[in-house]
Amino acid sequence: MKKRIFGHMPDGTPIEEYTLKSDTLEATVITYGAILRTLEVGGLDIIGGYDTFAEFLADDDPFQGAIIGRVCNRTALGQFDLNGKSYQLSINNGRHHLHGGTGGFFCRVWTVEEADDSHITLSRLSPDGEEGYPANLSVRVTYTLQGDCMKIEYDAVADGDTPINLTNHAFYNLSGTGSGSVFDHTAKIAADRYTAVDGELIPTGEEPSVTGTPFDFRTEKRIGQDLSDALPSYDHNFIFADAPLSDVCGLSLPHVATLKGAKVTMDIYTTSPCAQFYTGAFLSGPLCFKGGRPKQKYGAFCFEPQLPPDGIHHGVAPLPKGEHFNAVTVYRFA
Image: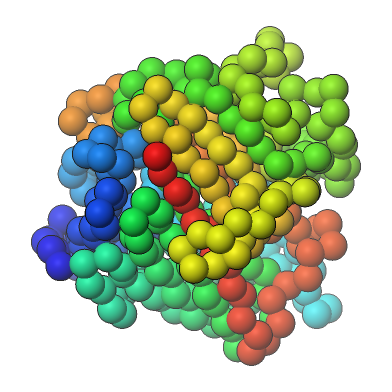
């Protein structure tokens, strides 16, 4: 197992980087944000991120490759009621709370519990009151490389009821990092509905059918095929249906999506009921991705398996005290 010091926090805390390998894949993970910093398929890096830790700290879009929590996506007005008490979360996206807030999991230093050549488990304790959330939450995330697959496993338990929704926010370009627009990629997504949002990207509570809309990816098509001035990009939650079960990494998981670039195909399998599909509308300089590759608008996509967004306002129950949140996503590459 290879590890090195990747940088230091402003208070001097060292940030470690671990290298994982399988027969066909190589990845690096850093302890800041439990970030997946690189992912190489046959030697080709396909995710965004930076060469130096200083660039991660300087990024105005700080979610690159990170584990997102305590709740990913947007929480309307950063407010919710739970067990007769009102909570106010930190506000970091206009009037709303996004991806766990200004001090979410993405910018916290994680502890390595165990690591070897092919897997790493990182953990942290999110204390009661962090970013406004109730209860102490213990979180563990494991990255594993196995053959042509990368598996991400999430586990969390709290000493009180709390909202939770964990995901990974890696930016992918399957033609190689910084290789132009992903609108020429193709996608097939086993989703028959999507989450409608308002002008601030807050869910309205409606879940329209994808039939006859630009959100219908049930048959493979170019990502940019149905985009227009009215819908210039995607940043929407797709709700899975009729995803066939597949045996992958020793698990039987729904095969929810296939995305293809010029050089790599990525199949996604997950226990999550839906995923945010984001095509990089807010990507921009002045920072460059690794190796000086351009960080440009629409130059990468995220596919973030998750629970329904803003779920605390739309019928998604919080995690009960003492019960475990578990989720698994496998990415297979060819």
